[in-house]
Figure 1 (cartoon, rainbow, N blue to C red):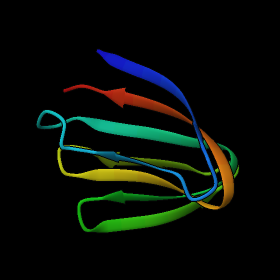
Figure 2 (figure 1 turned 180 degrees about the vertical axis):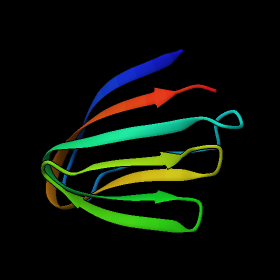
Figure 3 (figure 1 turned 90 degrees about the vertical axis):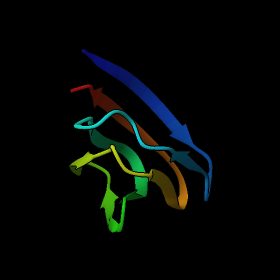
Length: 78
C-alpha cells in the first residue's frame, strides 16, 4: 500500500520522523519553495520541481529552507 500527503511547511519548519517498517520508501516532489531532506546520514537540498526518492526505514526529516515550502509526499510501504 501507499499513503499520499500534501505538506505545507512554515519558514524553517520541519517534519521529523522515526523509522518506518523495513523497506519503506518515500517519494517527494517540491511544489513550492526549497527543502532539505535527510534520510539516515544522507541529506539533499531540493527546490521547486525537484523529486527525491529515499528509504525511510531509518530516522528521516523534511525541513524548509529560505521560507515556507510545500511538498507532495508518497509513502510506499514494503
